[in-house]
Length: 212
Image (cartoon, rainbow, N blue to C red):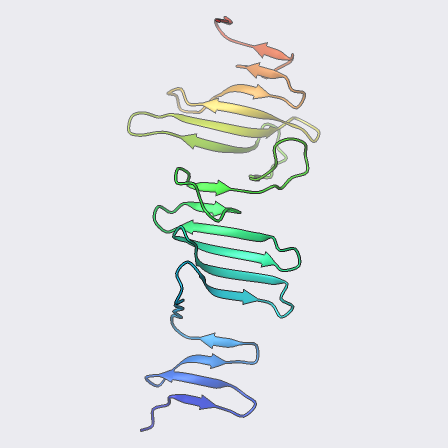
């Protein structure tokens, strides 16, 4: 029978065959797999694969956690802090820095990044632009059929300098999603207008109503 099963060279490669086709081979840098590699763990809710460098300082672990998620975890042994990326296979929910994702959210970001006082920067969204009035935004939509509920929270550049304004937009049935409110870099609030004072309101009927 001329069919190969296993071939090895002294001080060299070892190759395993299936039906005379090479499937697993050792190389100078590691191993090479041709086809699909299936890893089965005898214990439930355990990582099925762990990869680490020779210094044992960085690890990548892949497996299912106790909540049925696909979990990818990288951990530096020198500080012991894990970095998780979780994917819920039923529903497609994603967690960044969160081993378990809340059932009511599609994306959950957990972290303590950021050095500023107050709220930490767990999520960073950027769209680099130096053009005045342009920037980045997060679009939210509850649209369904003829109901078009859309809103945008944005951050846009000022005409000059390293500053900008936070803008709020809501859809009102037209061809665009107009800006309805703005906080500038000085903390001024404009409703229907770019603010020139601490509170600046512009409207065809600029009424203010206060109730107890």
